[in-house]
Image 1 (spheres, rainbow, N blue to C red):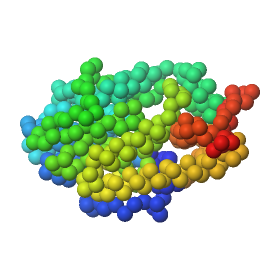
Image 2 (cartoon, rainbow, N blue to C red; image 1 turned 120 degrees about the horizontal axis):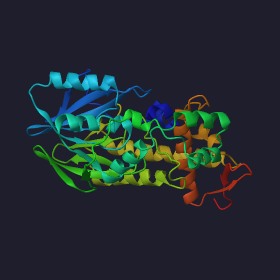
Image 3 (cartoon, rainbow, N blue to C red; image 1 turned 180 degrees about the horizontal axis):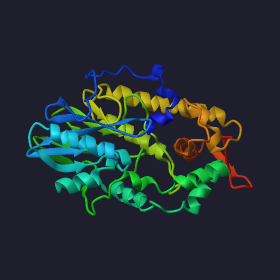
Image 4 (tube, rainbow, N blue to C red; image 1 turned 90 degrees about the horizontal axis):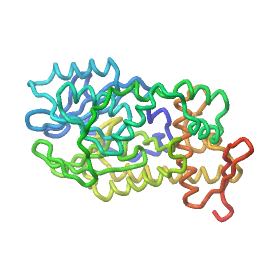
Length: 361
């Protein structure tokens, strides 16, 4: 849902000069071969961000698929069309999932059971997904209510959150009860080629990217996207976290480990070239956001008061999902400056946190 929450730096004037080698995305139920043995699938999503890119890699007797789409009848129908349109009778050999968000993992359980294959996923992504799914149907916990009240949410926002809480698992087919762990730095042989696992953090707990030096291809998942920024949020389960530092460090790691001449296969938007330019634009864009935040915090502000410094659209009270994303990302920026010693905060009598630039900053 990243494009629901476009940052100011996502506007066209700030985008680097990337190149897009494919004039159009694959049609529904069809694939495009982007390099030998790697096929692009476009799967529909029922959100404002209306698609996700999936990847099928030639794996000898079948295909290894990377990410699956969200659990909907529409997505299942598209998968069935893909099976029907396949040029031979190949099945799946494994299901690889970059991270735990429903548009990536939603149909992993269905596909692994249908083809009797294993789920390949990093440990923290698998376990975090299982934990989030376990909240399905549960009432919103007091810690989460305190978290959002502390950010400045009013009673109407809290009630809307209560009504929506516990829906995460409804978008995910039950996961298999075991998985094959992906580890940072691991080399996987998929078909004729070796793929390196590069783990990043910030957008999700232990996000796996896949880099193939022989094919000069990087499957970047949500860690690097060409036209939009990855959502980086603080959540009620770890209110003092600094995911922004993790995400920025992950960008540095990708730039260090992956050369600039790769074809980047992102989870959203189009395949592109220009990895290092895009990473630099994301890094610079985040620093500009923090600079605007610093100026805003000359006077005390709540988390919900800094949206205008960070986002390219107005964030209202009526869409609690968008409000939650904006609040989580605002807190990620605030916590990052707190960790750097640039801010101070204090809670008022109602338990709401007020932030301001520290005297030493």
